[in-house]
Image (tube, helix red, strand yellow):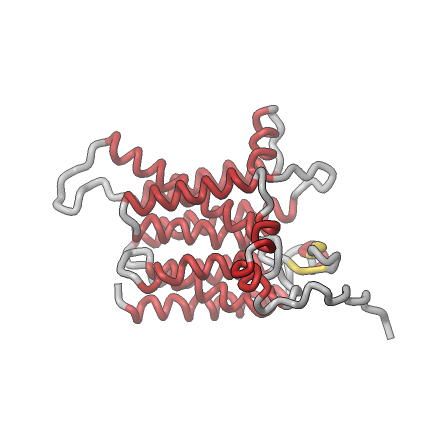
Length: 297
């Protein structure tokens, strides 16, 4: 995969994100108020960054994909992450806000389908479909693969895409955190050989376009943007990584997800000087007072 194609994917991702966010500022579905949430400071912040970032990733990754199979896999993974994430963003029952994967799965086990539970099912299904499309049925030498081996690879790759989508969403608790973490992981994929390089480039481009407003705390990814970025990251790993790399990445993603049920990522980051400095870079100081509400006149 040429470096030029990856660069074009990054530029398309950045440009499409910027243009989509500007268009949404002019005409947001349901009105601007529907997309507002309260952040960790108690201030209003817009989730329109999410669909803008998803559009940027799709534009760069699908347009510059190395082949139709990769394009379809990236579209399925990213599209499912964005669509079901936005459903949860806009349709969440604020009276019954179940937290974490365990909370959503627990609700499903008791027969209650929350928007979070629907998101888990939808992103999971999209991830498996994307993995099935991305996983070849033949070996590089042309020999047909056994059904059991192919199915095992598809399930592992699907789990990696879904787990990556969830993990990036878990990091979206402070301005810039999810964007920084995603870029740190995807940048090497964009530079190394592999069919997922263009997807990684598109992720980096889209994330860079959203960074200023995210760090300024006027925008946030929301589930739609975070799940889309994470799913695209997972798909890039599936397209580029060997089986050993994919399994190692899956183990890391699952391990961090399980740990998040018991340990606060924010507490760990704040207690680790290097992570704390990276996390706070570019962000408003913690002691900055809350902005007063706007008044007429």
